[in-house]
Amino acid sequence: MASNRALWDEWTTLHSTSAYDVASFKAGRNRIAAHELEEIGDVSGLSLLHLQCHFGLETLSWARLGATVTGVDFSPRAIDVARALADELAIPARFVESDVYRLPEVLDGTFDLVYTANGVLGWLPDVGRWGEVVARFVRPGGRFYILEAHPVVQVMADEGVGPGELRLAYPYWEHADPIAVSTQGSYADRSAHVETPMEYGWDHALGEIVTALAGAGLRIEQLREYPFLNWEASFLVPAPDGTYRLPADAAGELPLMFSILATKPG
Image (cartoon, rainbow, N blue to C red; front, top):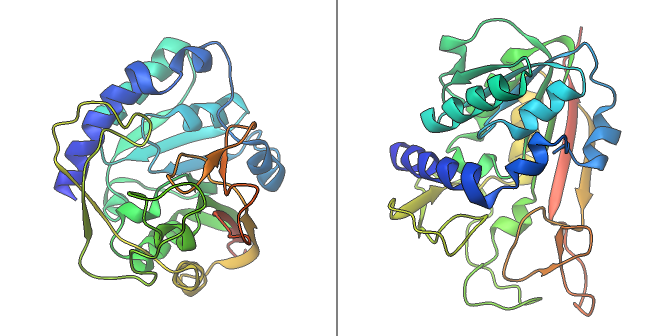
């Protein structure tokens, strides 16, 4: 976790200065996908907690849509950049430096909507504890939403393969020991120079994710699966809408992302 935090500090500098299109966000571009807006609905007047928010572009996008937002990330550099962006753009927002598991020690209250998305669960070793923290911060009658890479994607090799070439390489179910992978730039710029040598990650099965949320007292209202991924993978090809998909001539289909919408009984 300490090594990953150092890596995300580096990635924040890279992403906020070059790899992410921060200029278009400052000009007013919303970072929330259309299907997320459709599934979540109007957030005007809602309190929203964004877990693992990186440097806050999505958090601040929700604020622009009318939510009262709190973003959380374990990277000190990410929180500093997020606060500076909020100040620069005069967008009301609160940002808290904490890893997910420690958050109940440093943040009080509950929220109308707890949100997390796009490459978050693989950095956490214990999805059961994650579910407990999520449920802790959803107010009675409130909701939780996650958009994430499908666990099926996580088992596939992403090195030494070409488009449509699916090769099993990693565990599907949760495992105690992390998978260690040599760092190659960042997911947004593979050619970038990064000092932190290794990334450490964990896999979690879809059943384990659903059970973690249900076991913590949340009610699963919907589980959706999608034929696209929001970032590059060697076995996928870019699509006109900016996502990545299996080649058109692939033999069969796979779910590449999923979303869950859950509620906490009132």
